[in-house]
Length: 382
Length: 198
Ligand SMILES: Nc1ncnc2c1ncn2[C@@H]1O[C@H](COP(=O)(O)OP(=O)(O)OP(=O)(O)O)[C@@H](O)[C@H]1O
Ligand SMILES: [Mg+2]
Ligand SMILES: [Zn+2]
Image (cartoon, rainbow over all chains, first blue to last red; front, side, top):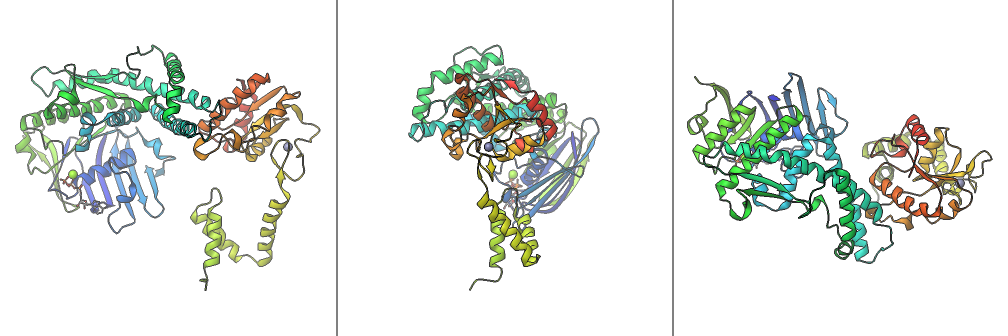
């Protein structure tokens, strides 16, 4: 899909900003603190119904204003036009999402319809941070490509919260009745094994994609690998039914331990994905450049995966990602993304042609200054 | 001295506490009441108090009733061999609307939700057990298709099975996450008809 126009009102430091976008690479250029990332954030509202980083909508309306609006014109790969509109009113904390003038029944029904891949400096923690960062990454990618996964995940979390309360009550001796755990165990195993199963299927497909993307950015042979072993040393079952049975089995074996801790110790909420380079753990051994190349490959892999799964080319947002990369590596990344679809890149560099040596004949530069567009033009070069 | 709008404000606050009533609707209702003639307001207030004074729980099925036992429990054409377990009195109304069901009910008063402090003790589970002993040929578990409803279904099944009474549950016509009271009659009738043994 392609975002052809974006218009935002009272969004962060933008009073009223309209931009037109080209089908290829769109550079959002400007000094620090001028409102480049805010534009990426506005686009994330159109695709994800929420900010890609702010935890709460209440922070987003321009200081002193009670509401914000984002409107975008999107054309799908198949040529279908959509006018997508998000309006948020702080007073009632109400968010209205409209597609072609119709309000959508639920915000979650939008997820996956307009796929997007956003890469900003915070995403570096996927390779450097703890397991929860990698679970977040997994859930984000799989949820966008599978509504069923998203539903299972939400269901799993609800069961987990209820079950944790039962365990906590047991630990504190508030309620210890037998049979109180069983109703939650069955559902935890059913939903938890569904989540495990889909994560496993995903990693199996995804790891080779990442390896192939990675190979574009390095001369030497470096082999990245993603490994998912939710059952530890135990063999991953061949069917989801078996997996569900194994889940129940582990729950039974660890029940005493769980009662002692007063919380759930088994399941997808404890997962991790091992990231390795040539068989060595990334977190323990990799250089900063290798981390950076790995995370870029994960993100572009996410892009390719979503594209094939959603039958729709996602938007690609790269916020400030080239700050640490040398020019040669940056040129390779840009050369790669130029080919895959529409992209938005923010940078404080003034002139992308000089520093990045664009190959494409057409791209667009949009200069942002103080929450407004100072200049926007499409550059065609021979 | 209270400000002139205090009594209006108070009524709005009270309305906001009602289920399904937001701030805007509460204001609209309060202003509507303000404009009514005093006699009509007295009628409404009387009806509210009346309800509270006359309605009580049926000592058999725990539905709301003015007579004990309730008209359903004492109805001559009801089949006492079937008990349909539901969460709330609303669900009884929903199932009665289908005109498909001839058995009796048992109103649990909610479903299991540890986070809200609702365990079996908070529900009318203990009251259900003595009812299923004598001459009951089937217990239908008609609970919401939410994780809490599902947990309650599993819990009751494990409790009732050893007694030897056949237990069934609604067929999966009800959308997952759906409350019984919001399910349309046709769907509910089909779910009742296609109930499955557990
Ligand atoms: N709710 C808000 N209302 C008004 N201004 C806001 C609001 N939230 C953030 N800002 C302002 O927006 C600016 C930051 O914008 P943004 O993050 O888009 O900058 P940027 O162009 O990406 O800068 P950098 O190059 O440093 O990343 C800051 O000046 C901040 O004060
Ligand atoms: Mg920024
Ligand atoms: Zn009764």
